[in-house]
Length: 144
Image 1 (cartoon, rainbow, N blue to C red):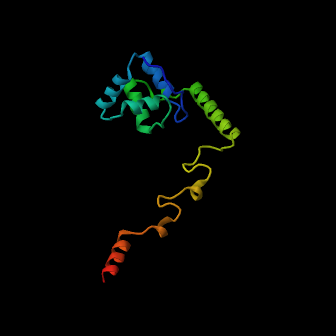
Image 2: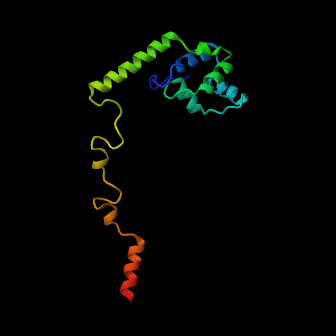
Image 3: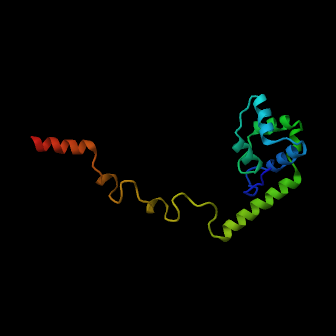
């Protein structure tokens, strides 16, 4: 069995509990996915892995489905200690971000923002870019 490369995320609180119950019942991810399919729901292996690793949010129907497939009450997926651990991870992540002075995730544009980002057209922008129609009109006027 492979070890988790990336630590637990903060997107849900049930992922670690799913892994615990699944391993106690000696069920592989592949077997759990087969059970999902028998219930009429297709979830990819990568999606299940991210869910278990708390790297993605859990949909409400997935929580119910997982409980049914593991043959446990839905409440068994919600563990108070796992919730406390999740809160600590979120707080640590938030504290780290505020210490770095970023206040959260970087924007796609970086520090400069949209104003500092060059457009596809370059410095001149759309006004400096000639369209095909302009070029054709110019050719037509030269011929006349």
